Length: 38
Image (cartoon, rainbow, N blue to C red):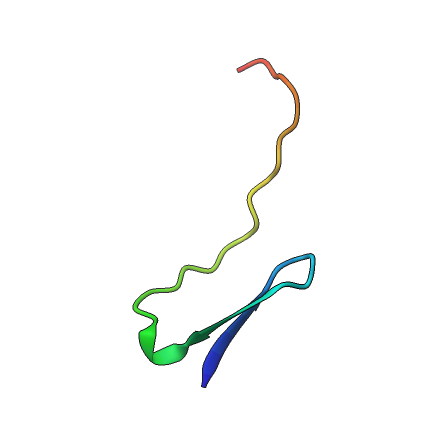
């Protein structure tokens, strides 16, 4: 069965499951905008 990935816009990427060697699933990265103090 293929792996179907979909982004927030609705674009899909279909990958054959037998071609996948590693998948890491986690929370989406936080988007930071502007300048901040480190």
